[in-house]
Image 1 (tube, rainbow, N blue to C red):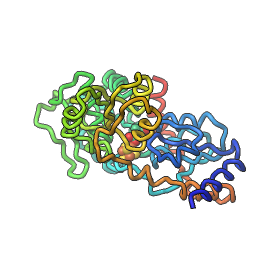
Image 2 (tube, rainbow, N blue to C red):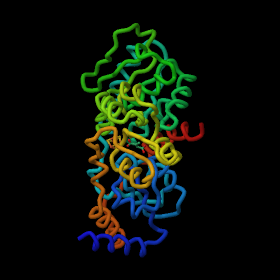
Image 3 (cartoon, protein in one colour):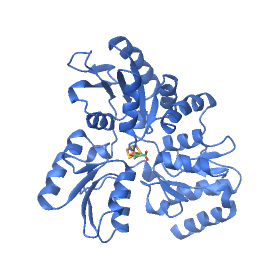
Image 4 (cartoon, rainbow, N blue to C red):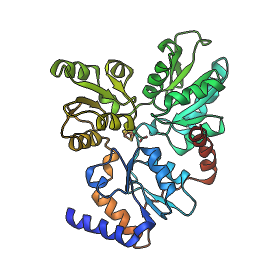
Length: 345
Ligand code: CIZ
Ligand code: SF4
């Protein structure tokens, strides 16, 4: 039962002491966050893991995040994912073979020079590809600056794997929608009607299955029911939804905005359900709702739960660790180049 699992987890934490570090992503369930040594977004958590001397990092998040933690931590630090089924539908929409095909075809098709950039929500292999081709990773906090950085180097950008973050960011930079195209990795086609000379940003046809659930009708409904409510959404939401909202930004931006708002503020938030619920609980003096009344959890994030955390920690305590996440040295080195171009910028 739950109490036993909690005791098991606490005992493992007590036994392992500072040999153990448990990062917990903002989208994790409360029952997991309760035991996390740090809360954050994927990059913050990977960096925090690297700043500890813990031998064991039990990453409560999804697969690509554990990979990033493995890339940034030392060789003698080991990263584990409590449930191997905790993937990310967005990261899974771009695999390395598709990326190589796209790059080959696009470099022949488009005129001018091109640089790849990838959202950190991507596999280590994609980050390595981008690193090898002179590009960088980006997060939703620095997407605009990094897109500028990329345009200082090349004429065109291939943006992986989230078309919405790419489109919203390019739009904020003043690039008209007519100068963006979508690459379909399944059909291996570029959806673009305009003149290839004008094309600036090629968006990978990927999306987040959680943030795509926030719709234009959701916005109209909130506006009708709550005329004084502010709408804030994550830029993984569709362009039309971001356009109709009052504000958009990274997970950190959303959290800081709510935390800095005065009592009585009214918010409809378009992001993952576990985070929205936590913001509601931790800011009882504000009126906060989800932009979509049928709240959207990230199902793969939710795979990390008390039983999996307990099982994983118990395996460490017994000296037979389960679910290690190891990125090969080759991929790690190339991916580090992409991450460093972002981190030192
Ligand atoms: O949507 C996600 O999964 C986010 C915001 C991930 C991250 O980078 O923390
Ligand atoms: Fe992936 Fe979306 Fe879940 Fe984030 S919320 S882990 S992008 S599916």
